[in-house]
Image 1 (cartoon, rainbow, N blue to C red):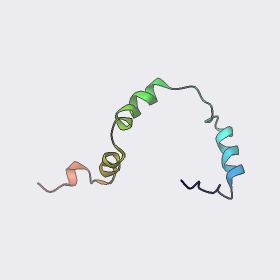
Image 2: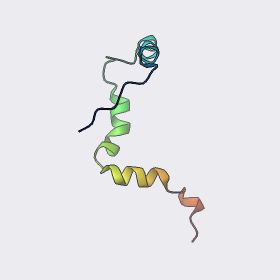
Image 3: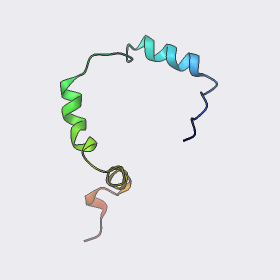
Length: 60
């Protein structure tokens, strides 16, 4: 498995994450409840649903 190289702005990226206190944050039950159905689906299904047009745009 190849490991992706770090971006050139990695230090700035990490500084922003620390500034927003995103890293090492406590779990949030509401967010976990929202994302749980996505975690249970295969990645292909999630991507396909994200790329699909809204049902109102699908021809009948």
